[in-house]
Length: 330
Ligand code: AHR
Image: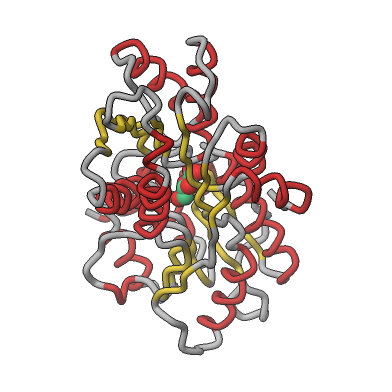
């Protein structure tokens, strides 16, 4: 029994070292007593332009706020995130923050953090844990509302979106990572909203895993099996940009022959929108770093924080994108 525990402890500290080596964190041990906050942050990965901007925001804000950041990139795998969180518990960081790859399966590791008295802050994505005492707060967007905004644009622009002129608006959906909150919620918000117009129908829906390559591959297969696609609804810009490549390779004009709606509003997406290749983008802000550092300080000072903190966001038409691009920060 003792031997097993020792082996387990050794395995945890080895994996902690491996995580430290692949992250960009500093080697110094966390010290809850020196007045400096040490935060362990378990990031989803680097799947999209949004994620890159989000990581930069967190790293820059930690520096600005004097927070020592231990950062790991889970490469899109929940097991890597769980391992990273366990290593942060082992290292006795002051606070843990993470953006969960998927919604389910977090209770055990969150209970471990709670038992170790380490507060957890969720950023960007939610978990489905019923016990909300397992985390202090959740900072991020309302993904259902984002899906609704995308659907509302289509309902409002239905007259121009029946590109094939067959009286129906055939939509193909490029879903985000299966099981991830933004994929589930953006699909739900969109589906509920387009019910207002019975001519709009989602005819095919498949995951492109929030990546440009994924979006391109799925769109290629949609185009091969269906020549009546009017609209692409992509759960993020990167998949929309991949779809543009597939549409152009098929000899069609994105934004005209096939309308495109995406979510995020990162620089490349906004450029494609201003260029007329995307028709509408729902903004999802990745700039969560400053608020996260502020929340961490408050939580550690014992201040009350709201259990849910929503990010403020807008939407962009082609004209608005051209106007906003020069000042866009990401
Ligand atoms: O969780 C936020 C989503 O994750 C972004 O919309 C997407 O680009 C990212 O990969």
